[in-house]
Image (cartoon, rainbow, N blue to C red; front, top):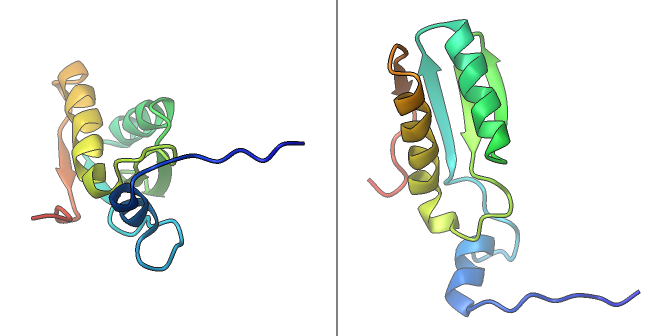
Length: 105
């Protein structure tokens, strides 16, 4: 079996792996509260279809992490905000509240 390698710039590699050389996922987690349990379930399902990692905290709160394949680790907030904006446009009757601050803000 042949080993495959992926070429990427040093900056992209550092952003993805951080200084430790290990996958950096600390900056891209978003905690979201919704108005109802049904909204939380719908949002979680949508984010999973977008290949995000979703953890259910309680009936109205979820943690979402950018899709593991994403090379945009420094911009994971932007990626997640985009998915959230699309879901909100599809569900104008629901409200969401981001409980974690922006990583770059």
